[in-house]
Length: 107
Image (cartoon, rainbow, N blue to C red; front, top):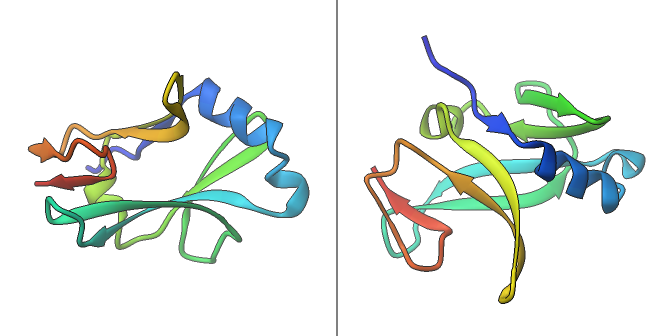
């Protein structure tokens, strides 16, 4: 049985701060081929689609399409604020290695 990704309270709080739900938007997390390690994350605000997995919290939504779901099994979607900037990050236990940029990985 696949374990869906988890979304932290901090990620939902950031979505609330930017008003995603009030604009009818959700945070889309997808996996695409490419990047320097073979796969890359695509993270953007988008409208939920019919076949998306919808993860809800604090009145906000994070969506994952059915093709990306196996790559994100048991991953944690978080929001990180550091000196170099703030961004949504993914801790993916399925990735065997990742790039220094944090958006590319291999399995």
